[in-house]
View 1 (cartoon, chains in turn red, green):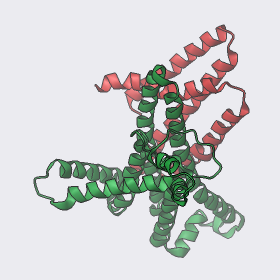
View 2 (tube, helix red, strand yellow):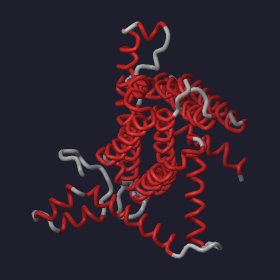
View 3 (tube, rainbow over the protein chains, first blue to last red):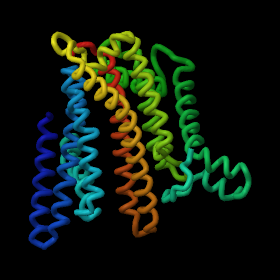
View 4 (cartoon, rainbow over the protein chains, first blue to last red):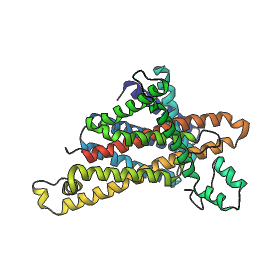
Length: 114
Length: 248
């Protein structure tokens, strides 16, 4: 994986972890967990997409491609669906976690590209 | 086509305005039913017109439009051939058209009084079904009926070929996988664009105070529209690669 991308993901994970600790300290446990779970989900989803692209472009093993495709859909999407319908986490925390990857990723990568 | 009985939470568009004006007439009903198809046809017309204008007077030293079209087509061909290899060029027209069509449909919702047809599952299902049948046809043509059956059974060789259980299990898994693919393509694209449309409508509902949120939603819509078009095309290309490659 690209070094900038790796650093961006590390930064996102760190930011969300710090935010979750602050939320736990503020007695918002379900919000913190929702944020962590949804960010983890979106990071895994993104990494799997990068993986699919990498395997396809390098024309690696067909079985590896099938395995990654299977993990992405249905496994990961089923987990995402269960997270949404479980009602354990506030919807706003899940949305924040899902958007965090895009926003923090753009903030981290764009200045470097420019 | 518009799904009946679904509560709409989208911004009004040209067709809904016209349907409201003509309320009660059969034409209003027609507009309501064919809303997504109408916007799809507008996109088809735009693509056809640009393609015609770009290729009408093709010269060795290209003009701006021809240079842009060549850049897009060249980029898409590199993308497809990067995954499928040199023989992938014959799939570039299909996958490239899919990409441009989906991208424009996704972004069309940002134009005032227009709508993203891809927010309707019937549109995305139609695209996914096209990919499904073309991939099956490619697999059958490349491997032949028996070869394709062998491929669906996981190419059983040696002792595995003599056990009936494993090839049958693999066959069932493969069949399920083949049918899950169009479903995943349909739901992923349709749900994402529908969610974006709803987000845009909610942001617009806040009025002047919601302008920062609206701008943020539009930024997300552009980004997500592009990502979804890339993902749909990438996965379609990967499905072709799986139908074409013979090595395990």
